[in-house]
Every structure is written in structure tokens, then in C-alpha cells.
Image 1: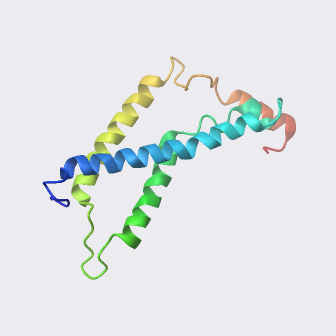
Image 2 (image 1 turned 180 degrees about the vertical axis):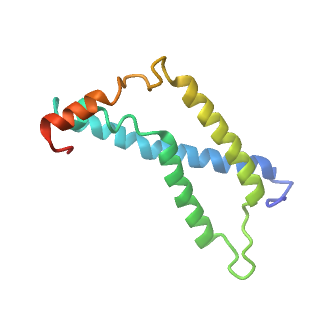
Length: 136
């Protein structure tokens, strides 16, 4: 469904840009969390376990998508008719395609062991917990 003026912007491109905006905001949410891990002293639990740096981008994109959806619902939706400038069917198609690409690249990034680079398994994680008896 055409939700923006054809003369100014194509509706499909507009929805693709919305999904890209959510992905970019998810990336911006993830960066400080990963950098926070560098702030911990050497030898600490979080520094040794690499727990924050292996959090998936998908999680942060989900949070950014929920935030954008709440802003659109509260400020840019006609409350009488329930109409918005976002076409649900188009955004579902675009986001499903983006999710397919995200899953494909995540699988391609996995090493031979099936774990992301730099992660050697859950053994070191559990051994750190067993040594300190306190996860944080």
C-alpha cells in the first residue's frame, strides 16, 4: 500500500530505510555495551568471559525496533482511524528479508566449531563462575 507521496519517495524504499534505521540504532545501542567490557580491570569476570562482546546485534535491533514502533504509535498514528504512515504488510516483507540476511551472515560468520570468533565454548565461562562462585 502506498503510504507516502509517490512524487517525493517510493513507499518500498521508505520502508527499507525504516528497517535500516532500526538496524543502525541497534548497532549504536550495542557499541557502548561492548566498550563497557573494556572498562573492567584485567582479570575480572567480565573481562575474562567476553560475555558482553558476544551479545548478538539482533537483540539490540529488537530493542530499537520496539522503541521506534512505540514512537510511531504514540506520535504519528491517527488515533481515530488507527492509520499510520507505515504499511504493516510492506514492513513485514522488508523486515523478513533483513532477518534472512542477518541469519545468513551470522551462520557464515561461525567458525568450524560452530561458535563465533574469539569464543572457545562455554567451558571457560563455567570455570570462571566455579572459581569465583559469583557471576558478577
